[in-house]
Image (cartoon, rainbow over all chains, first blue to last red):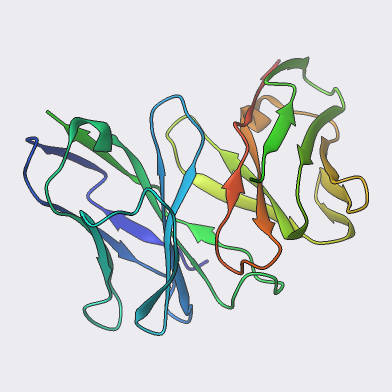
Amino acid sequence: EPEVTQTPSHQVTQMGQEVILRCVPISNHLYFYWYRQILGQKVEFLVSFYNNEISEKSEIFDDQFSVERPDGSNFTLKIRSTKLEDSAMYFCASSEEEGGGDQPQHFGDGTRLSIL
Amino acid sequence: KNEVEQSPQNLTAQEGEFITINCSYSVGISALHWLQQHPGGGIVSLFMLSSGKKKHGRLIATINIQEKHSSLHITASHPRDSAVYICAVQPGGSNYKLTFGKGTLLTVNP
């Protein structure tokens, strides 16, 4: 069964550094998402992306965050100047059609980001 | 603001028991998702439903739109069912954003 893959599985970065988290969504999917989960807390929506633009974003997704689909397969989340509070598990997801249809979101295994 | 409340927070069961996890939400939604998160952290989608009932193997999910309530049932529970079960809703008017509950930690003992 096709999977969403995320790399790296664990990223350790110094505070203030830029980090790029990478995701390869399922190949025929059109909608892409990033979520994060701070340790011990619930999963939070960050951003959704369709047709090469952001469809919806949360208040968490401020100017230090950006997303990109640089080619036909990758979907990236960039954090420009990391802060300690950015430490979390980041999940990428994709779906075949927009929400409200019959197709669920498929999640990757996550990237654990640790900011020192 | 949409709140998603799950109960119980923690649930311990003996193998073979029937399990019920509940989810309540506060605003109109277009769909509700049940997700499973294993200790390693990965998330698996179990169900997406907007009305009625869905069944997959030993798992059953129901939703009552009028009462803004959903339940996830596991029949004949097994230790491999031990995981965090998360309810997430897609608010009406949003086709993308999911709002998550805090999850229910299920432990099934042999």
